[in-house]
Image (cartoon, rainbow, N blue to C red; front, side, top):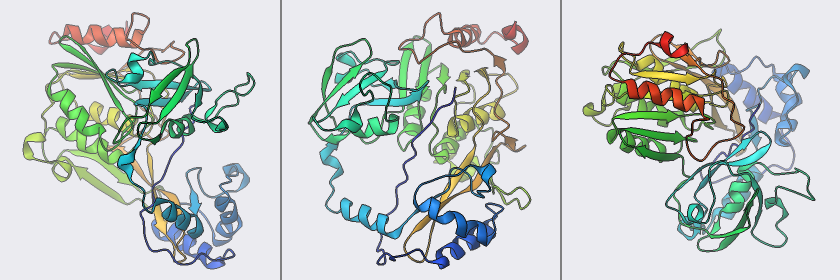
Length: 415
């Protein structure tokens, strides 16, 4: 089961030179110098010149066909940036809203992975696990309709999310499988919700669907008010890994504890940069704040990027008393980050620029994947609204937390 994501890059506003009418070889030369100086790819100048036009058209040949970039490479022309800049003039974010749900591409469908339980959408009947059938914002807005004449010819979760966004207070109609059409008003939102919490007495269940600018502050609040936690990172979309490393401060044992190591992609020319808790902490009191909190982390093959990095960080930083255990199956195996490089003509080139490794021993996640402490196959077809007995990973983690502080060995749980 493979998940596809829509990644949206925001380019800072700037004064852009007049776009060139034709592609200049100097642009390829600039890109080549970036590749060489940053040790990004094993590309020659001719390789770049032969493939730059494909990047400009957002076309990606297979690596086996001689394409020297990976699938994350991109090129944004100066004219496109100028057009985005023109569209943003006079834009007032406070006048726009959305529906407070987190969507995920799962098994070929667009599924609700998280929803604010205090929202109108939840009261109207939308639930985690619902498969989006169609979204209607206008009679001619076909891009928001996942199904066409009964066929599953659908846009992805990113496109549907954009359909749910629009002028504040305006209405959008949503239909999910097995339920009638629901009309909802767009509400003010600073960011797509990413943290969803269920309080079960002394054990708090937390699902994190992605990492954005609000995620870490929400997680800190949840962890500060909880005794034991189930942290569900299954199907996590990833996001800004800087958010992850700042959260890891709460589990570090000392200021010098290394949280994340960044490494350039080309391993023949490694450039490592250690990141310590002391470097990213907000205050000394934050270091090790959650070190005594038992945490059961749920992971699966769809735990992606920053979700994997957080799970790996908790595994590395946990104490010898095993107060943190990972339950589930191997993760996706993606722990790289991309950088945007400006070119002299006003265009931008995006390339993979670093690999993230975890802890002082530089635990590698990219391609190697992250293995759980307790392997439990996941038989769920989709996300579920509530944690039930059919969710074996959840039940096993719950039983382990209930046994705390009594010592329960990994071997005993695996039986």
